[in-house]
Amino acid sequence: MSDTNPYESSVEPQNHTGNMTIFSNLFTAPSLAMTQVQQRYNVLFPLFVMILMTALVMVAYFVVLDYAWYLDFLVETTAGELSKAEQDQQRSIMEMMSKPVMGSIAVVTSMVGIAVIYVIQAVYFLIVSNVNNDGYQFKQWFSFISWTAMPALLAILAMFVFLFSSSNGQIAPDSMNPLSLNELFFGLESSKGLGKLLSTIHLPQLWSFAVMVIGYQSWTKSSTVKSAFVVLTPFVLIYLGWYLFFV
Image (tube, rainbow, N blue to C red; front, side):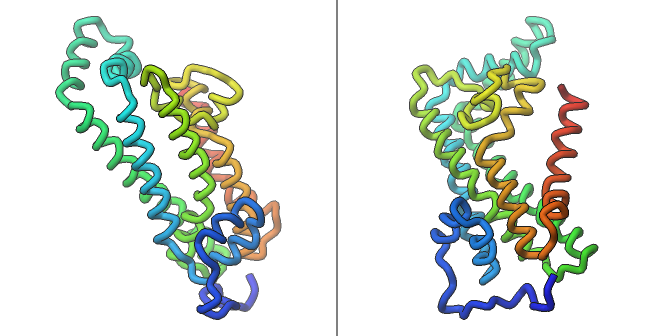
């Protein structure tokens, strides 16, 4: 890390780069984009956009969803090994929640989930920053996480197209992202095992990982190897643990 205070920007306040310019640069010039984020460490715009778009795609999912099929799907995936009577009892409990109620719960859960995940990631980078004495605080890392996650908007847009092109609304939650590795390359059952794991990894997410590595290197002046290690280690451990214990 250089002697320059990370809170200070080398660009005058009136010359702050616009949010849409930063977003565009995440795909065309990620190092520049992450330097521009340092001008003011904006959190509200990327966080609000991601939460809003995630909520909208969940609303779209429940709009097109065949709810009777969805209840059968939930029973099969959560109680498939139980007896027929127990499955019927499970389905009766689920039927107590109407489609709007179930959808509202899913929307709120997804919105809160994004904020929680961002906080956990920011805390991780804060801990690493304190160990390395980089000088960055929680707000800076929360901005870092919020912006580097923005490429996932491409996956959300792809979900909208996929959902509204569905002919019957029988779409499993884990198969609604057409850009996931499972949907693109493997075609495994998305509700369990390796198929479920691969359904959580998608192409825009891989670009987010790359932007995180580039951004971390730019912010901390670390080597590419160290940056990749710091950024990717938590994800590797999470997916490895998932594979070992649930696949």
